[in-house]
Length: 220
Ligand SMILES: [Zn+2]
Image (tube, rainbow, N blue to C red):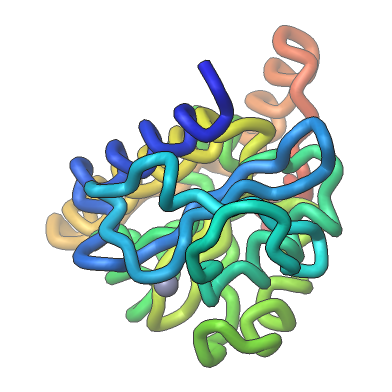
């Protein structure tokens, strides 16, 4: 499948899942030629087709395609410039995760073993005006280790080694946000105790060769 087609399919998926409304969100991936394919501005992700994808360089200059580049292209380029392991970026406004990003960050705590192992830390970036350099500044403290970034009073960014992984980070995050909000309604969540976390990290490392980035911040 062509990269453009892959990107179009994930656009349709994020819209059908309700991770975006109206013209919200933007999605991109890095090509083997070190260019970036990104959704144009002002298109509903449920209606995106290959003509709505533009190709840009790392400075945001248009290489091919005739449409207006997404105004949030800075977030995407910032991640490609700073993370060699990132080849796809998705920015959405999923309801439950954005509710948490607008209220209190209950996502950045070790509650579910598989979330700790796959997503790791879930930082909240300080509020900044959309499409400005302020947004990049707010992500800087976490760029070395995070796969997902909550944007305060705004939404979420997920970064993956490919578009499928970035999508699954977004889906898993929203699923976790739903569970945690429900758990809060039931009276609160229990965290994984520190010694059990160490046990989990050790199994992850020995069995799966996984290194948990910035894991020590979960150990109090
Ligand atoms: Zn947004």
